[in-house]
Length: 382
Image (cartoon, rainbow, N blue to C red; front, side, top):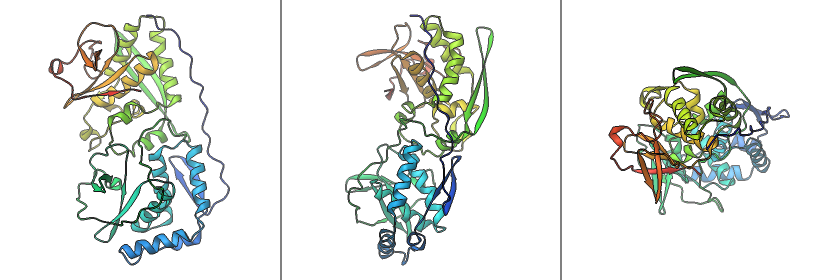
């Protein structure tokens, strides 16, 4: 098979949303937003600090003119293509602009999220408010509580080493608030551009290959707020069109008109050699799985980050079947291509190993340590 030139993706430049003067304005990952807030919302107070205080606070909000605010929020997250995590971030930022006290801003978040049909519960720990979210995916390094057979995560306390302790939940459920938070990112959010230049280079067959990219730092900042969730979210997240278009254009200069095996190994070499290797705890001080855009932005990455980037490039550039291959302490990929060498079975189908962390290894070559080890799981790209 010979690689043919693929059409570029049309890119629409994102411009700031037009804003009429509002009484509350703030910046949301580079995008200026504004809202009008009813005085009954501003005046709501959490007192006494028990379940009666929760009832009182909710009642004050319910008697306010909140419909216009809900409409404004819905309009913004539709225009900005925000996924559930984007909505959560938007409402968190909005709430913190209104209330100085953490308990009150959390109760306001709970109210708004319930009104938007999300299944969020509220609890008290030592008389302070804790929000509990019902999520589609596992949220790692996060306290969770089983309520009526369902796990709820205290997402605000992600990666917090301090134990929450005994939690008392408020047992009232808002009607129709049954939507689980889904961390999937089927579309990248439309954020105002804050472009930063990124130069990548690597050696291949005696030549130095250089790629110049322009990356929207606002998008990187948004992705940086993610807690660690299931690998499926990262492998199947949308890749920013503008960034992919640049990268594809640069890579196609080297692979167009050549055999698919050459092209696949070239892209594999790009991911293997364009970044320094560094473990998450050394770079970020915690476990962090990076989206493909983050791997391109940062100078350092680890095996799972490279596997995600390579898998996405294979899928988009070549449209071959590809899976993430998860071992206990390593992540690789495998491709549905007719190439000899080391392979894994996914169901009844043979996939050829391609390891983005095994420097200078071509398709079909596993790290010796993992050659005879059965992977723990596979992550399928949709």
